Image 1 (cartoon, helix red, strand yellow):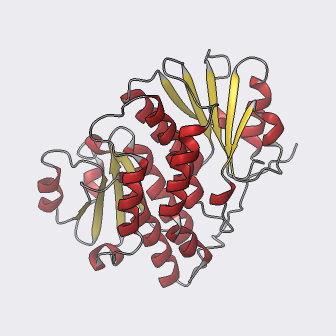
Image 2 (cartoon, rainbow, N blue to C red):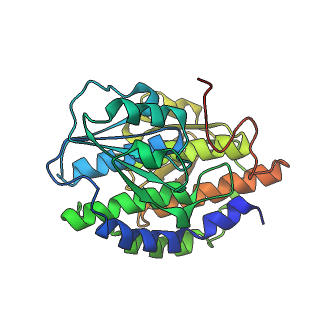
Length: 302
């Protein structure tokens, strides 16, 4: 078993620990604050998911940006930065630019990195750190941690499960066999609405990183405005969260394969996509622990 596959399987336990830690952590955004969330790559997609979920919970205006495109002159009460390595150049430069102007909190996996001094407050999720270059459990654990903070501050939308309930769904997601039609497909389109759109983007990225797969990601309601043209036999449309009305029939009409685990927590459903990425990588003879052209952290030259 690859290191990535082993790390994927540990997510239910990581989320349970995050549920406790996030509820007790004092530095997360408070209801009513105007907040921005930032990161790079996978961390940016987790930022998108959290921002949408926080707004849906009515806890305050929340934006998400890649760190390289952050509008540093825009006023916020608090900025949340997600960085597994704690060394990503764009994140550190942004935190430096914001120092003294806005309260910052960072989520990281490594307490021996520059982010410890760059942010005002740091949550260290070292139990979710990874050896693999490709992020899986740290990303979802960071989102679980942030979700737990939202739960502690007030009720979430009725359709959003607690992190504890998501961990139960994750137990099935790490063991349930993947559908052969999904494994043998030639193309995958991931879709989501609201906070699950960030998860759809992350699913597509995992497939590209680990397996070099042909994947695309869109808001679910945008799928019929063009992206459906790529769907057909041996191609998958995978929806995170509730299935929009009529979409199943549209996918069937063009001969595509629909994947929708509507009753599962969408974050748990992301585990299935992570597992698919590893299985595809190994079927091609790739090493999912060491993906082509990637490194654990992007550190730019001065």
